[in-house]
Image 1: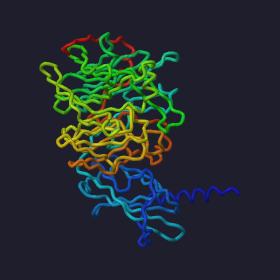
Image 2: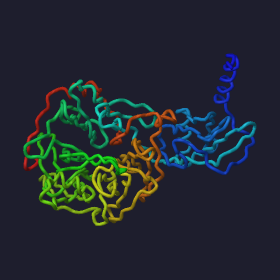
Image 3: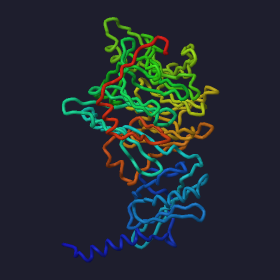
Image 4: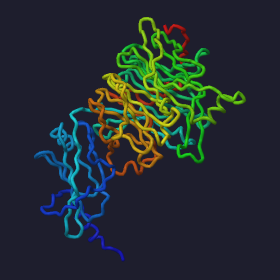
Length: 501
């Protein structure tokens, strides 16, 4: 039976009126349970300058009303999707700074209103850096070229492309971009790599961009995983010969392994590189500088061939579970460019684990790292969790409030050392999404929440994974086509120096 247009129009008008001018019911019965919402933003700690936390109520009802309130300040919305106006939201957060926003969800079935148990958004007075950047990549190994490095203003929903990998690609000559990084959360010193066609490192030094060829006869490869020294004009890189293993029955679908890996230092003033850690039986990876620029942290695994009939690669494939990393550090003298002896910061191998991706908080209080059963590429490892180590006491613990049963990896600190941003596969075990958690002065993490989007169902529709999230204090100003011109140009060759000068 066809419904007359007049009734359809009337229904739409009534629905619009219900959502456009909602009121909290004067009487309702308590359900004694939290509403089922997506994303799960119940009882999370949020920055005082974050974008609105839009969510959808999944409980079935004929009508919904949601009230957000702090003291006498309230915002009331109707409809299944709760999407606060951005100006109303930020005014509410300003009122609630250092306190709670109470969230009350009411639902009507027939003529009866019910109230779900309220929950809160705890509004931290600690602000969060206004920008983040990340790679967006399809979760497929045949479509990896269709990726971007993007940046997002997280006080609203504005997202822009820093560089699109397809801008310099051709039908027969593809490439890949990765490893974007910044110095002190600023964009006048930054970099990202281009692999394969038009290969090189796009390096911005004091605002001047150039493409570098960082490969030399004295180093293992061109630079891979970078870390800008926050004080001195040098960048640490791991250099890697890497391969992949694809599992057929292991739920950890992929292994990314280093056949060999070392640590080098690049000096952009002299355009030279030098080896720092290059033991033939050690795999060194993921360097990270201390805030004073005088200590270099990195992961290291000791691996030797046991069966002389095997090559290193074959034995690493056979014994992939035996490759386990400790976190080491070495002091550095910027006047002489000399490194001190190796000091083990976290001996993961002694507990049968593998620790990677060390990141020191900007206040030099904590070391954040990923801990898993084995390997260094924990983005596919379900067992990988975030751990924190107190650099003053040496005590370490898992961030249980932020972790999940799925992979947590690729983490970064906000510039004020109060927030962490990391990738997690907790939604569906396939796509990585970005999660944020507060870490207080005592190293206690809050419940993590997913990066808010304008629409509540965004992640259920978005077919890209987020990769390598980084905080930023400002956006990248160079346009994608300007980067493309640099990528298509000739690369400046670096030279090797045994002294680092």
